[in-house]
Image (cartoon, rainbow, N blue to C red; front, side, top):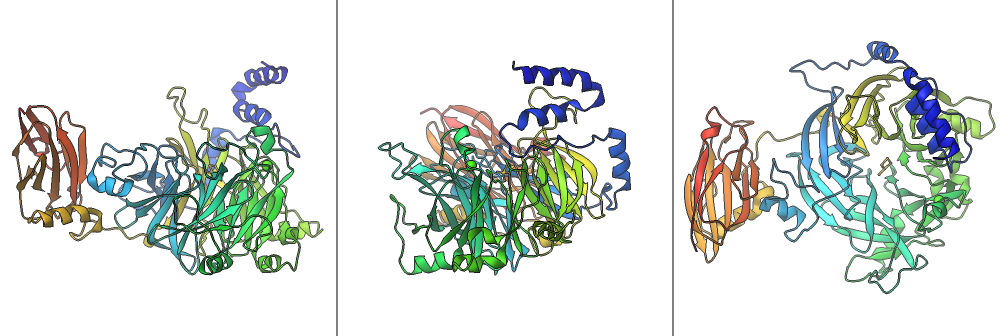
Length: 632
Ligand code: CUK
Ligand code: CUA
Ligand code: CA
């Protein structure tokens, strides 16, 4: 153990009873490599003081039994691979939407309907989602789709918000690790913008491992078809991204302008950059045929490396991370991470920098010093910004207009408040902050470490998602919410902006392939309980009405590939049935008016019970049937 570490441990022992230790210990050890080190985190509030602050909060946090929340929150499930739906301000978890993971309850990853989305040859059972974002029309949430990235396996998924199920997944070709993801806000979400984080050689076929010949790309997907519309080769790597309110620009941070393959190398430059993409020019280049293709993919690839008219590389300090557009549409604000600053980029100056009328750095209109480890910024719609300070374990509230005045030499204080959070915050998100409707009521802070905030549950700790009332002049911490690994980001949407169906309609495309197969077999999903034998393939069509399956016994031969289609004829809200075959790894959800199907091999002769695994009726236990498998 180094001397410093030893000292920290002694400090830790001394201050344990004060509740100071975690904050100081992490602060002291995490600053290595950070420029402009200021003091450690601010004053530490007692639990009692927090409770008092929560009581004083202006917004009503209490949502009583039977009452509904004001906002939907959509949380990324991180490397757990799902999306979670919460109610705000109660922070109650309402639903989980499996996306890149396999889900035993709904059968996601097991059913044919989910495989239609994941790919029937999909071998990835994991994902790593960070950035959930909802489609927009004219800079406002339209409630149609939610998109989310998969960093682990280079994919982007779409969730239909009317049924809250994932309906498309696209693997992005030619790149590795989709990280930052945002949507075009204006005039509507035509594109999903997403960053591939790591540079790779092209072709990446083992013939060349050098960093010099490696690059990565910025990607745009068509939000309706989910096909990749175009890709832009860039210098350096790509981290986070956001889009503007004119539809013309998107901006991404790069922390590895050094193109280093080791940690120290990525910190060599004092400045990396924000790369700004000129969407109009890129579309024009594609239209003009001014592109190439890479490898087997047919996606148009344009070259946006330095000197390209398609991009501008704005130098900013140092290993920047988040980039967030202010809801007034005026600024891209990039957080410095290894610099205690944020860089404020004036979007109305971007035309001039693209026309080479001004210098790159002329678009920077403020560079406020905020504290240690700034990662992400969010807004209240009243001119204030809220930036997470990872190392200081704080949220800093600051005023954008005052930061600009200060940058211009005026003697004004742009800092409004620093509030301790617990601990090491990544993203934060104020209600409706990334839309024109930013209402400055709630702020969620996704803290990476919870330390001692909850009952201990072994070495693996939950994260801590904290809720802060920002409706007044002062931020008030009002709630701690434990979360399983690992919400990088979340968004909040007014509840009237999301319209969900209470039951499926029979023509839903979600089970289109089941309907198509039934038509081929000359049966109707809603009317028939039939078994179709097709060589070694057996298709069992059955209905369900609580508490009984339309087919309670069927016979197949050992080795048959069996597909069971269950159509739930119940029309009553909340009467979801399940279908599980014992010892066959089969489980699925069939909600009212839904059809679900699952395929498995009947490889074991004998009697195999199947049963309903979603509690549906007083006689739910009795909702069973038998599969009889004859010896081959
Ligand atoms: S990232 Cu995780 S804290 Cu993937 Cu948006 Cu910043
Ligand atoms: Cu049907 Cu339980
Ligand atoms: Ca760097």
